[in-house]
Image (cartoon, helix red, strand yellow):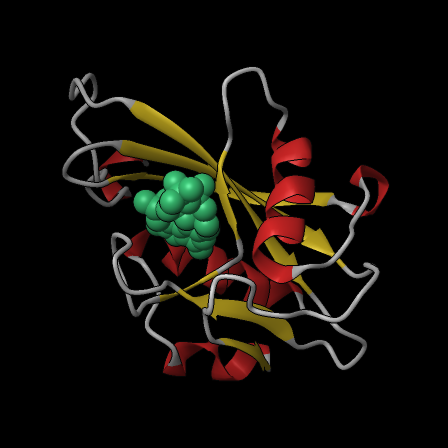
Length: 147
Ligand SMILES: Nc1nc2c([nH]c(=O)n2[C@H]2C[C@H](O)[C@@H](COP(=O)(O)OP(=O)(O)OP(=O)(O)O)O2)c(=O)[nH]1
Ligand SMILES: [Mg+2]
């Protein structure tokens, strides 16, 4: 019943620009997920996030993640190892975030915080101890159900 649906977080046609951000949940052999802390000087600094970033004009989300994983974490991934999992659709004050989240269990290299950001490998049940942007709440819930 539509009456049972919670209020949407967005007024339809709110006039906000939609920003496409690709995010990745890297999962290690122990089933832990990588999260990184947003560095000082960026919006939502200090919050923990799935690595990733804005998809550039003319870029595919998968290509954006390959690029961001190299830039932010110094690891190599391939599009073949990216499994589409879920997406976030969330209105912030200044833009609407559309953020596909991909799962990836295979990469080359050792994760390093290339922008000086902290990162952690976290058991999914412990993710709640790390404050994340509000857009991520449904994604964390879905990961918890899935992993
Ligand atoms: N990467 C990532 N971004 C998220 C998550 N949740 C969430 O609301 N965001 C928002 C925060 C930012 O407004 C936007 C991502 O932008 P960003 O600043 O990381 O973009 P970027 O890596 O391309 O960095 P920049 O070059 O623009 O500085 O998406 C998340 O889990 N991961
Ligand atoms: Mg980023």
